[in-house]
Length: 234
Image (tube, rainbow, N blue to C red):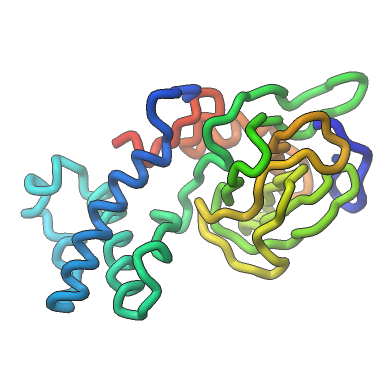
């Protein structure tokens, strides 16, 4: 990232044919539509579908873990319909510990490491201004405002000393103290702060220390280089 030194702790699959989130939509939408029909028509609970092994063969050969994820998403969908929230409100993380891509359809333009005589503590993902930026994991928004060279930025605390930072946004969509789920829209790509061209600068910090995001996310099923998420590659 190209930015001045900010305050506090921070210093400031390229697989084009199919977006990773389209797989998410294919899995979750099927579950949600079924849940909506049940919730609106009969109000029947989904507990049996969640854990009954006899239904494995009728659910596309998914393993128990994948079925549970689908059933949990469907259960959230039916609850949203019953509560009047609609299906859209149930598009969120599939599990509490899931990690997802922070951006889609981007160009990976700059790596973590020394650059121009200074440490570049994150990665740069170029995308058009206004492209949605997503929370990579569930957590609490600890910063959502102008942040020195980072421009308009969001920092999310995920627990266990882990924080993610999303910088140079054109617009912020969350407020400090807000709870977010993995996959929630939190900002829009921009060119604010010390930046040359629209992009997302993304950092991961563990106990206040920046770590290399590509390898760190790869251990959690997210492939920044190929733009894939393991949870959708069943």
